[in-house]
Each structure stands twice: as C-alpha cells, then as structure tokens.
Length: 227
Image 1 (cartoon, rainbow, N blue to C red):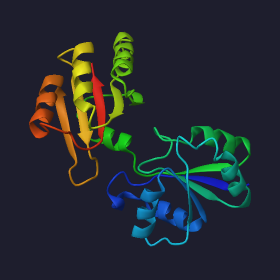
Image 2 (image 1 turned 135 degrees about the horizontal axis):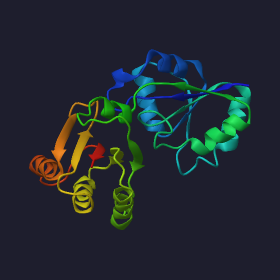
Image 3 (image 1 turned 120 degrees about the horizontal axis):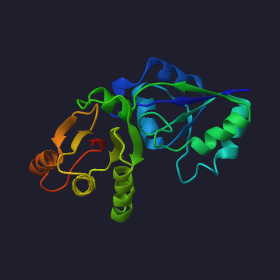
Image 4 (image 1 turned 90 degrees about the vertical axis):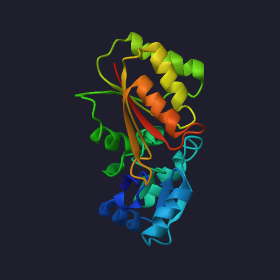
C-alpha cells in the first residue's frame, strides 16, 4: 500500500515551509490541493515543476474519493490545504477515513498552523482550550453558539477563527453575551508583513480596531475569549 501525505503549507510567509514538505512535494506526481492557485505559487517559488494538481475542497471532497483511492493504488500522493495544516478547519476528514479503511498509510508532514502560531504568542494564561474553528456566518446562529458556550460555564478559554468583515460584530456579541470584563486576544495576518495582535477587555480591543479600521477591517483573525 502507498502513503497519503498530509502536507502543511505556509500560512503567509513562504519561508515557513519545512524542507521535508518541499522534499515530499518533489517526490510525488499528483497533489490534491484545496486551492490549486495557492499550491502553484508554492511550487513555482521552490522550483518544483511538472506536478499534476487536482482540486479537493469541501464542495467536491466526496466525489473525489474514488480518484484519490485510484491514485493511491498506483503511488504515494499528497493532500495540501491553501494555507496551514490540512484538516484543521479544512476539508479532508471524510476522505481520510476511507483512505485508512483501504489500508493505506497516512503520514503527516508537520509545519505551519495559524492555531499553534496564535497560541504561541498568546499572553492570556491557559493550560487547555476549546477550539470552535469558524463560528457560523449568520448572526443568529453565531449568537446561538456563543450563548451555548457561555451557558456551559467553561473555565477554559475558547479559540476560533473569524473573518475581517465579521470581527466587530463578533466582539459586540461577546460583550453582550459574556460580560464587559471578558478578556480577549486577537491576532491578524499571522506571519505576514502586517501581522498584529490585540489583547485586553472587549471594549478596549473594539476601540483599538475602530481606530485602526474605521471602515473595513483587513486580515483574517484568530480569536481567544477568556471568561
């Protein structure tokens, strides 16, 4: 049986890719990529030519299963996300179960992850955390999830991802559902040129964002709530 490599890609700075990841990308013929455009940039940057790139995202993951298994029947292959470590809020879990069941080896090629990068610079004290990935897009659904987390009364910090156009609304929801004294830590554009972090009580962080971005906020966020 052949090996299905789960390759972590840079979350911004291309220098964060590992040598082992580059070697693995060079060694295979076929790469299944969440976003082939992003993978092309990586391959071109590191001079890795001649690879067959096939898209594999949340819309087509199930329909790609037979093709992935056919590839693995012939040779080793790779799964790579558009940024960071595959399967961390990225497609692949449905696929991976079937790959294991078919008897193939699954091997991680570790590297960048916005989650672990965020936690490594977090000034709020924590020994464990709850990871909620992305909150729902709709305001009612988002508030429902936040209310559930508040009512569960967990003492562990809650970590999730958030998009720039929802970040202020999410802060307002947290203030209304949790309390004004709730501490938050936010980081945006990790490893990129405009990397920045914010820490403090909700109102203070909100005002800082308002001052910096009076109109549209820019950059993807990782977010921690500490109640």
